[in-house]
Every structure is written in structure tokens, then in C-alpha cells.
Image 1 (cartoon, one colour):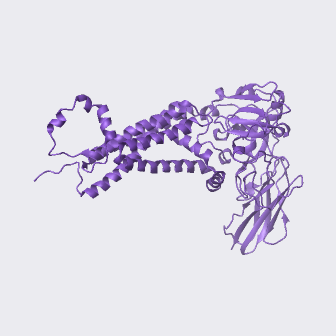
Image 2 (image 1 turned 120 degrees about the horizontal axis):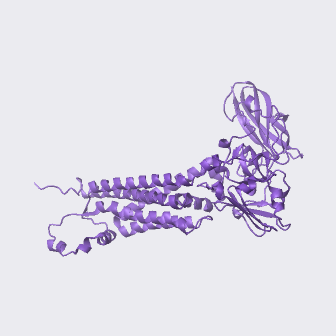
Image 3 (image 1 turned 180 degrees about the vertical axis):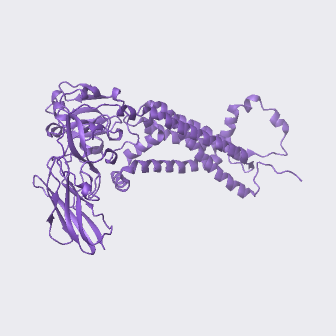
Length: 555
């Protein structure tokens, strides 16, 4: 009885080929994992934003049509970036599976597929606004190592079977050089899907284990080493200056939330504050390295360090509600904080901003551009360069160390995070990021109101229950909130004490609910007499509008 060659399968040729295809797909997936792991390790030397996953994700955000972005924000909210990264990894995994199958038939095409994968990462990284040539290294080196890994993983799946008719002399005449690395690589790249090929499963799984180890160690080590860029420790050690003009103390009973279950608090905790931006990798700026540069239409443009801003004698503290233009009717992309910073109008005037400037183009550390109207920056009293939020330095994800705030304007035309440059220019001279994508160049916040409680379609017993929520019209203030249940007349709600026109106001209306389903609607009126419009509009291109309504179920 002859012993079976261990490189063949126990089944027939068809079964063996099916197993090889499955293992080849796995080889492609493992090769991609090695490529990404090595890329993360190299990114630890260059910078977190150079990671291919981050770079490709950033490019995807830039290239995604606005309706798709709006859907992502509406569906995933502040988790839209996590969803994007997961989606990117899924696409990479599917691509890698195909590359493995292609590589089984043609090593050259398999390697080419890995290199194309790397080229996409290189282009995405170097073309980012804040990118550079070095940003392409992680994707390039990762792709090269991934190609070698693919060849190593596919090799055990195409092991030549012993040929009884082969002339032993053929093997003897090969020179040592032909058996070297170059020769083996040439053989590997030239290999095709040999129908007579065997399969060395043991070597495949050993190689796979090594690939998993390299991917895990390189990727995990890279992520660990990237923490050296983290500025959380330096941020926590930073001592904020005292304001020359502190925010007034909140009057007694200013916050109705403690007495009404489900009502939004008057001041939003930092960890609960909404975040909507395009940064997958949050910029990490060391306080000692920070510089704010003024360019353009200034008589005496200067560059400021963070300490320069801290040392000013005109620092202000204000309670301001911010609103994202992506906020839908009834949405929660709004929040209030106590901000600390330099008054923007005075700052611009002392640098001699030109009368012919009507737009400030603000650039963040990651290259994002936000255009703000110069007039609002100069005339809105509480506009500021903020570096404090609710008694502590700005959280990193909210723009540390400095961001801009202009009450009364949506964030995409006023609230540049990680601010590094202010260019005094004109609307006709430059279109910032969002304007390039057809959002309005200027957008004042609309009169808005929202029902927080009762929650829609959540059953509660009949009887008296508060209807409550928040309303805002920054720089103008809220004068009145009215509520309507079903087809009844509008009833005026009680408002929380007015603190500042830039701060939203809570409202509440106790109501006796009868059993059944009821539609509850709210509308607000600003202090200058504008009543919130009933006409529904989507956030694009200058903010949503319409009355917020909920349907409640009463037992």
C-alpha cells in the first residue's frame, strides 16, 4: 500500500479545489490585515491622520453626496464616523477576499490588487488638506508588506506534486542563486492555478497564524504608539485664566429640568454635548505648540500663542446655545455651555481688519475651512475665540485648544474647531468647505422649539402630565412658546427665567390627558416678534424649519 501525499486533500479534485478557493479568500483577508496592521505601526511615526483607514474615510466624507451625508447624520447621529469606519473595513474585507481568489489564479494580479489597495490609501492620505508626502508612507509600506504576506499565504495552496516521470537531473542543474529569495519570488509571481498542484494545509495554517500575529502586534502596537500624540494629559494640566467679564449667576429656578422628568437640562454637560464634524481622527494640538495666525485684509496681522490669548485682560465668559445646521425638526443637535474666551470683535479690530472684508475664512488644524460673515464677528457681542467650556479647557473633540463661536449663526458658518488661521477675505474670493458643497454661504439660526416630554408613542396613564421642552432664537431670545393638543386652541406655556438672549429657554405646560392617542405640537416666538414657521424644510441648504409634533399614547 502506498502512502498518500500529505499535500493533497482526502477528497476528490473538485473538493480539493473548493477548499483551496476558500483558503485563498482567507489568505487575501489575512494579507489585508497584515497590510493594515503594518500601516498603523508606520502611522505611529507619521501621525494618526496618516492611517489608511482614516485617510480613506476622510476622502469618503469629502466625496460623499450631501443627501447621503444628511442620511448618515440623521440615521447614526454622532456615531456617523464609527459607522463610516466600520463600512470602510467591510469594503476592505470584501475586496481582500476577492484579491485572495484572484491571487490563486494569478499571483501577479493578486499582488497588483494589493498594490492598488495601497495606492488608494496613498492618494487619499497625501491629498488631504493637512496631508503631505510622508502621509503616504503608512499605506505604501503596508501594501508592500501585504503583498509579501499574500504570496507567503498562497504558496502552500499551490505546492507542486511529485512527478514520477520528472528527470532528477532537472533539479540538480539549478544554481544556488535560483533557489534564493529572488528566485523564489520570481517563481511565486509566475505561478498560476496549476490543476496538478497540491495543498500543504499544515504550512498554510502555520503561515496564517504568523500573519495573524504580525497583524495583531503591528496594529495593536501602532495604536498604542499613536497615543504619544494624545494631548489629554496636557489639556488636564492647563489652568484657565479668570474672566474679566464673568457670566452672570443663574437665577434661582432657572433650570426646570430637576423637577420635570425627560426635560433637557439648561446647561449641557461636556460629555453630552453634540458633536458633528468631518474629523475621523481628532486633531491633537499641544498647548505649547499652538499658534493662531491672522492673514489677509488686516492692517497689522499677527500670530498668537495660546498663552498670548490667556494673558489678555478682556477675557469674557458667556452662556451660549450652539446649533448644528444638520439638526432636524425635533432633533437634538443643539446644546448649551458656559464658554470662556477672547471677545472676537475687539480681537479683530485691534489687528486692523479691513472694511472691505466681508468673510472670515477660518482654517482648522486638519484643513477644514469655515466661512463666517465679518459683520457678525464684529457686531455680535458674545462672539469669541473660546478656549474654555463649562469650567474646563475645551474637550479635544470640541476644538481644543481654541475654537470660534458666533451666537445666532449655525456652526458650519461660525464655529470652527481646532482653529489655526483666520483669513480676512470676501465671499466672492473664496468658497469654504460647505459652500463648495452648495450649502448657503450665510445662515442665521431659525426660531426653533422642541418637545422633550412626553416621548412619542410611549404609553402613560391618563391624568395631568407636563408637556415640556426647549426653544431657542440666539441673539434675539424667546418671548413665547405655545402648545396645541389635537385640534384645541394654542395654549401658552410657562417659560424658565430668561438668562440671556443667546441661551435657550425651557418651557412647560401641565395638561390633563384623556385616554387615547393625541397629537401634541409646539411653536415659539422670538423676542423680536417672529413666530416659528409651520412650513417644513430639510436642513439643506440653510437649516430645517417647521413645527415639532409628537403622537402620544394615553392608557
